[in-house]
Length: 238
Image (cartoon, rainbow, N blue to C red):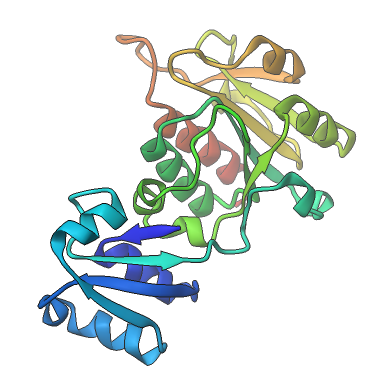
């Protein structure tokens, strides 16, 4: 995984994420003296390269002159079979069809702040962990458990068997989220802004809930809606 920009790399080092190597634009080593000192202190190789080369590596012009190769932390689980702690989960957020990396990063950030045990995404038709996600999460991606599963409906079935109540978020639902008394094991399910939840996923939900708004436009941004929903859960148990 390639990350870029001063803040992303500093947060990775602060979070004890393994950096394999760092690239910096030749002659710009003095631009980030404190960061360079930390990198050298951790015995990480620094490669001075041209601006054209760093753009090719980072695939962006917003690299701030520095990029790094990291090993994804253990809290990012890309294979469902590698996750063995289902019985330890108490609050889960499932994202159905969220493909925008900026939204995913913002949602992960909110999930960490509101004590969500795991963010769940399907392997297909979902945003992957990219430098954009890492940047939008403001470092939360290094701490928040994110799990990619083979099938959302199958995973929801497992949660139900473990006494989770499944709350689906929809602008057309009748129940207002602020009127809900949440059970101890909670799963929030959020769909994309354009399509909402798929019919098959809706059928799996125990309760459909909505965030009351003025309805002057169609819907909230999905990351904002997710944050509000997670806050409602958080305030019930904080």
